[in-house]
Amino acid sequence: MNQTISEKILSQHAGKPVKAGDIAIVRVDGVMATDATAPFAIKAFHQMGGKKLWDVERVSLIIDHASPAPNETVANLHKLMRVFSAEMGCRLYDIGEGICHQLMVENAHVKPGDLFLGADSHSPTYGALNAFGIGVGSTDLAATMLTGKSWLKVPKTIKITLNGELKKGVTAKDLILFLVKQLGAEGANYQAIEFTGETIKSMTLASRMVLANMSSEMGSKTGLVDPTGLDLWYPFEPTFPDAGADYVRELTFDVSNLRPQIAKPHSPENVVSIDELKGTKVHYAFIGSCTNTRLEDLHAAAHVLKGKRLTSTRLIIAPASKKVFNDALKDGTIQILSDAGATFITSGCGPCVGSHLGVPGDGEVVISSTNRNFQGRMGNPKAQVYLGSPAVVAASALAGEITEPTE
Image 1 (cartoon, one colour):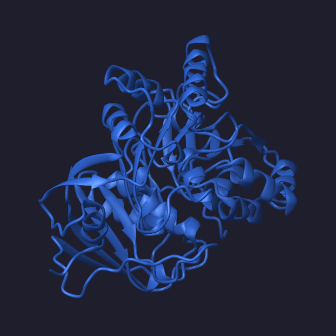
Image 2 (cartoon, one colour; image 1 turned 90 degrees about the vertical axis):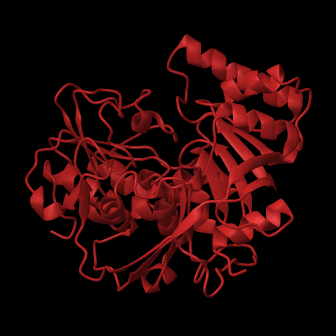
Image 3 (spheres, one colour; image 1 turned 30 degrees about the vertical axis):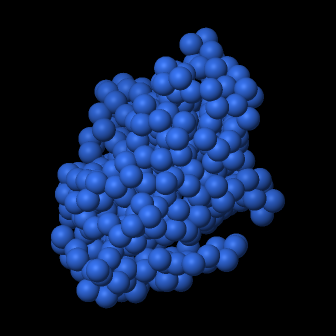
C-alpha cells in the first residue's frame, strides 16, 4: 500500500497499516495543554477517576494564554495547574517561558515522526518537524493523559507543491496567506495537507512552522512539511510519502512572482496583495503569536526599523519564548527594536487571543503578524485587524499606514 506521510506516521502508532478513512486507535508520543484548556482537562481527568498520568515525561502544561494572570479568576486557574503539575509530577512552563508550540519544538518535546496531541487549535505546527500534530478538546486530552492513547479517523491528504524562489521581502507568511485564499477557510476540512516542492527545501524550521501553523486556517486536521532540507540540532529519520500515494487533491503553484499578502478584516481567507491596501492608516502594530515571533521574525522587523523611530503608530512585540527574547537580546536585535520605540511584553498569546496586554480601541486599525483576525479576535469587535508578515508589520508601524517592507 502506497502511503502519504500521515498514513505512514499513523500506521506506526496504530501498530498496523492504516489508510485514509480508517478509524485508528493510536499510541501518542506526547500531549500539551495551555491555561485556556488545561483547567478543563484536569477537571475531566479527575472525573474519569484519574489518579496518575500515563507518563509524566510526556505531559506538558503551559501558562501562556493569559500570562501573567490579568485577574483573580485566571490567577486561580493558573494555581490549579501549578498544584496539579506538582502532585502529578508533570512538566509545567510558567508565565513568561513562552508560547506552547514554540516551547514544544524548542525543547524537543515533539520530534519528527511523532504523533502529538495539543489542546490548542494550532497544534498542526508540529508538521514543520515532519510530525503529526493535531488539536483536540480538553476531554479528549484528559483521556489521553490517563491512557497514552487516542483514536481518530485517518485523514485524506491534499498535496500542495510550491515551486520558484520567493522574492526579497516575501516570506512564508505571505505564502501561507496566499494558500489560505486559494483553498478557503474550509477547503481542507478534516484533511491533512502535505507541503512540498522546491520552495520548501531551503526554508528554515521557523518558516516551516508558519506554514504548518496556519494550515489550521484552511480547516485541516494537520499540515506536514516535506522534511527535505530540514535542519535540526539532533539526528532524525525523516518520513517521506511513497511514490504513488493516494491524494484527494493535488495543487501546484509557481510562487516566484508572489507579492506580500495581507488578510483583511475579518477572516484569514480574505487575502489580497499588499498593493491593494497601501496607504491604509494603521494605529497599532503587533508582532507576536505562535505563528510569527521567532528570532528570524524579530530580525526581519529590526532590519526594517534599524536607525529609525516610530512616530504615530504603537508597536507591541511578544517574543515567542524567553529563549527567543534572550537570543535577540544577545545579538542586539532587542536594542534596535527598543530604540525604534517598540514595547516588549511577556512571551505569550495575550494580544492574539484578546485576553489582555494589547487590546485595540474602538475603530482602531491593527496590522498583526498573528494567524487569525476574526471579528473580536484581539479582544474588541469594533477594531479592524489585518494580518501580514513581521516585516510588513514593522514597515507599516513605521509609516503609520500599510506599507511594503522593501520600500
